Amino acid sequence: MQSWGVRSRFIKRDTASEPTKSGVVGLLASARGTDRNDDAAIEELARLEMGVRIDREGLLERDFHTAQEVPNTMGTGHRTVISDRYYLADALFLVVLRGSAALLHELEEAVQRPHWPLFFGRKAFVPAAPLVEPASERERWGTGLSSRSLEDVLEHHPWLERDPERREEMLRLEQDQRRLRTVIDVRPDHEHAERRHDLPLSFTEGARRYGSRAVRVGQVPLTDDMIGGRTARTEGGATCI
Image 1 (cartoon, helix red, strand yellow):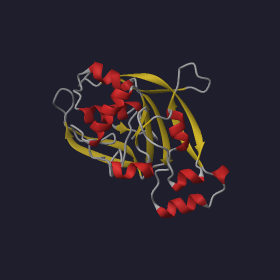
Image 2 (tube, one colour):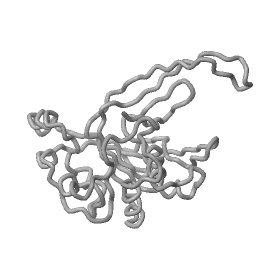
Image 3 (cartoon, helix red, strand yellow):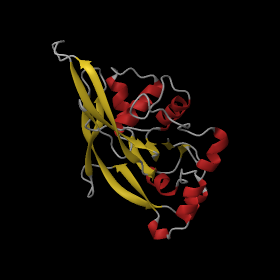
Image 4 (cartoon, one colour):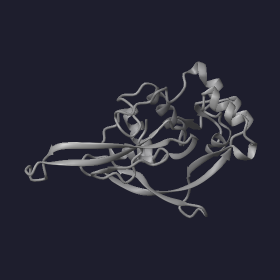
């Protein structure tokens, strides 16, 4: 279960179709033990270049909430509040970050030994598996640090799907029918740039601020090699989580 809110306010809590920049930065900040009031540390994480590959599109679900005896801002007038909360079920993503080798090494360690619990947008939505594979599995699945470019990782990293039936089903499709959606940070003047208002500027309680970033939405082919789980060597440069 995951929920990557973008415009969540009051009685409607939405979710994007893939991890947001603010959601990933928040997760990394929890792993590092960064105080929410440390704007400089949040800015450092927000500067990381991010690319997301959607290895399995999630199912959009709605959770209907009813809360009773909710006071108004004056502490009186208790009432019933009805809210809609949306989340993704059964989704699978490859998140790739590009930045300095020193910072990525630190984050790799932090994600494996987090200071605070990690969750996907809401505290109840915890990871079902390690975000970075243990050393014994990295040769097969390729997660961890890599010397390859962010774009190359998105285009060639082994498909994360491990369900045998899903893998066989995909292999039966023609090559031109096997595509994975991607969302990649780009310069604002990029020809195909789209704006996303999910760039965290501050997580300070009561004064959260967000800016916008430019992304390019595209696709990469899902090749036989990616389905087969082959991977290249992994050593410093970008990190996959």
